[in-house]
Structures are given as structure tokens and as C-alpha cells.
Image (cartoon, rainbow, N blue to C red; front, side, top):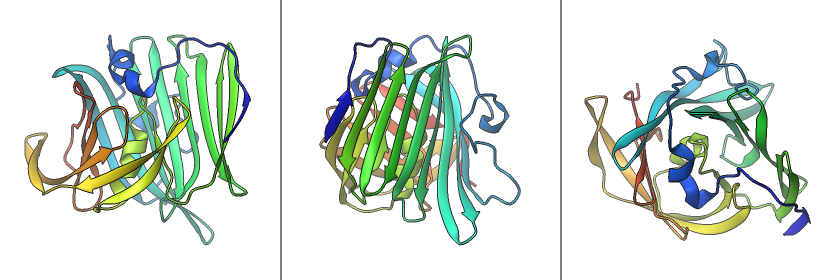
Length: 252
């Protein structure tokens, strides 16, 4: 791994700081495609197969602290197929939009996350690209710019504590026990994580019981688990001991 430049910074959430970045939420983003400032390609079109669309509630100690939305779709360009997950999480004075693109086998192509303040100004921008056998992470804030390089790893996936979008893609990877590298874009570290599937159980999603399979992740600083349905659609996320992301609408 090569680090090109690092200078002091501020207002940058970390992977372990998920509860802190969610405090004080008062705004609601009902539909991702209708909001200005969403990442490029966030709006689905009639010709774009929509794999999933969900609204979410974020809880801290069982109290609602955020709401947002996410979409997962398949994009065809000629003979090429991309899977695109895009979404938004909003809190008082902070809006985080993100977009993750992979190929049809969930191999990373690029990831973009932008944090805006109450005036709409981007104060934190993270971009990850995979090309030429290397993965490049670039993070820009008003006071610093960091670039890091990693050797490309086919199974590498993104982890972002300030955005729900990576979980939408992770849920679709498959119902299996596996070891994969996870790039935490907030800390810049790659950790080898083990994913273990549990027994299916019924989860209440908007008062509808949906069978969900828990995926437990080990090898990270904080406990992490998510639940997926039989088609790989995200149902729930439990992060650390206090934070949860809940799906507000049952998958159809």
C-alpha cells in the first residue's frame, strides 16, 4: 500500500464512529431519485432493471435517528453489465450520498461518497477506483487530500460507516460462509473479514413477516451483522452494540 499525501483534517467520521454521525437527525429523504445532489446515475429509468428499492430507518438504542433510501439496479451498456447501488442518509446539517458500481459478479469498479453540509457544500468526498490491477482511494476535505493505493483483490468489497449503500451490495453477494477483504473507506484500512450465514428466521418488515438469513461478520473492530432475504435483498443491519438500520418496506 502506498500513501501519497496526508495533511491534518476535521469533521471526518470514522468506521467506529457510526453512532456519532447519526445523532441529531431531523430530515427525511423519501425518494433517492427525487433529491438534488444525488450521485450520478441515481435516478432509475424505465430501461434500467430495478433489483431493489428501499426506504430505511436508522436507530440508535432503539430511537430513530435517521431516515434515508437506497436503490439497487442493473445497468446495461452494449454487452457490458454493471450493478449500481445508490442511496442517501440525512441528518441535521449533514447529507451523505453514495454510489457503488461493480460488474455482474460484484467485482468493484468504483465508489463515490459525498458529504454535504446544510448549505449543500461538499466538505468530504471519497472516491475509490479499480483499474490497471490497482485500487485507488482518494479522499478530499477542505483541509486535506489523501491518496492511497492497494493491490487489486477480486473479492474486495466496500465498507462505509456513513452510508448504507455498501450493505445493499454486500447483501447480494450470496448466502454463504466466505472470507473477503473489506476496504473501510473512512479509515483507509483493508481488513480480512469472515462472513458466516446463520439459520433463516422471520423478521417483521413494515408489519410483514419476511424470512431473513443473518450474515455475521468477524475480523472487524466492531460487531457487524446484516440480514438478507432469499434473493439477496437487504432487510436489516446491526452495527456495534447500539446502531441498527431497518428496512421500512417489505421487498416485492
